[in-house]
Length: 427
Image (cartoon, helix red, strand yellow):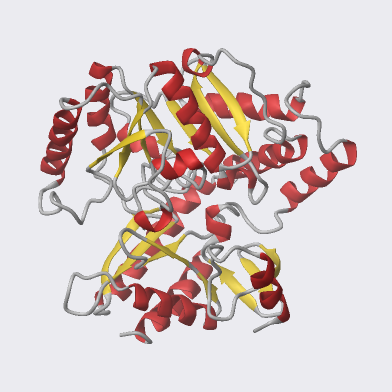
């Protein structure tokens, strides 16, 4: 055990998990690579849990942070803040929500917490619809709506949560149905659920479930849900903490795969917009955002430094068409991984969009989740010089692959080769 690992254990909670049998200390990064304390280089296919979205040490972002820090680091939302207003203007326009208002937080958890505050206040109801297999953060309210047992440490809650079918396409009672029939069955389930309860405040959903293993419904499910929700006056919250900013390649926001009946009422974001800086936020229609009748501020949300980083990162993302790169390079990577998976008895499914890819592992010859294999592949990939993540459903049996959106084709090929060798080691 390293000295730093020993010190970590002495001062950290037991539940603060670390990856790897020999935990990794990352000291610096550049582009799509990071280095550990021993000087070893790794190709990064996880990006600080989808947070280093553009590239490590992106010069445009580091320059913006340095220049802003040289002027003023902090003032709070009690004062006018030019970088915050400029970033809010851009996000409001990009969100697709009419008459949008933007409130900045420091994380996705806090963004979802704010969205729940808005929805329950606006609707005067503490009842929330959430998706099975979902994850929305680690605060008391976010845990209360998380439909993933591995990330729900308590049943105590300020909210009454009802869980809806549909977030997982290839498992569950409707998995055998075609896409249209799947949507029809999930909508019927939602209709039945709403017939047995008072009208909820909102449905919160990740268009692609992150911690749940990068699983998603057929396109159009949430649009079909929206028709039902609108009849009951129920708001739709789209949790875009992991899917936003073009990561899926096909869409800038995950909700756009379900846009037949318009944008969500509330959209939450975080992670990638700051490229490693601590930014989260909420976008909502003005009437929803303005429903609070008490004072509220954010001490650190909208910090001049993080806003400067967000502006520089968003500009780089758009000017270099990183959404298009995610579509092109991600499409090639998914097909390469599917070819590799076809030759492995452990791989049940390779799924995803753009640079948001999940590889679900099972015990050979069965449909049973295989978390031991996932842990072994994680270790083997690290030994091969590749960092990936894991997650998924009832058991942590899905490899999560989410490189920075500037990933090149040669880097995608290199990562696929390392993953192929790692999978062979557990077959």
